Image 1 (tube, rainbow, N blue to C red):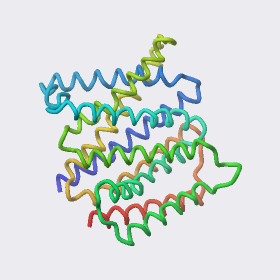
Image 2 (tube, one colour):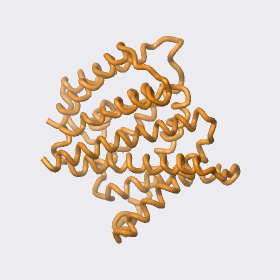
Image 3 (cartoon, rainbow, N blue to C red):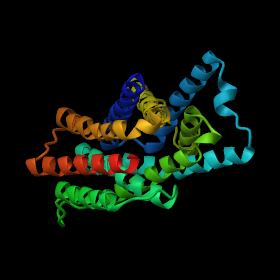
Length: 289
């Protein structure tokens, strides 16, 4: 029971901190801040916090050094592949509602199933495939596609979800090469270094408010990444029980949209969200069963 409660806690921590990061990102993106100011300052704050945590616990070597240098290159390449995701997040939230963004991100369980089939060679039965199909029907209900409400950023978010799902499937396959802290640290490091390149040519001395927002977002994103890895690490064979709690991100995203951005969630959209949650839960449970 303790393991399950911890797993559920880390899942909810992931969705809450992830949605909080999305809310700050949306606020900053619509106020015309530059992405490289955002990720360079925020990423630096998060990386420094992680290093201080490792130093305090005396575990820098445990989490940041790897026995095989090829594993180091692998983690860095994984982090580089994550750069487009954070750029898509920054610009997409400027043009689409945060509640819709959270709903699109929650299609990741379906892509995780597909990658589990391709990369992990897991067997998926007809129930899993049917759940995936029904889940995407729920997405169509939320989107209600027409020429007036479909834009390129919606497709970019789907692309970002593909990368996210691929990244975490890789963690499952190669979890033995690093700790959850190590995977998280090297996932965030490349985007921070990449942002520095642009920051050098367009530096910014942030105000106290800007520094707090940038740093808070960076730390929240780092915590969200780590909590995802940690949840599955401790859950083990009980992951089918904790996985549905990832859909709580839709709740946080909708609340932030309503409270801070005057967004509304229609009854039709709510129906689509319910379909996504139910079909995703069935798909996850059926896979782990």
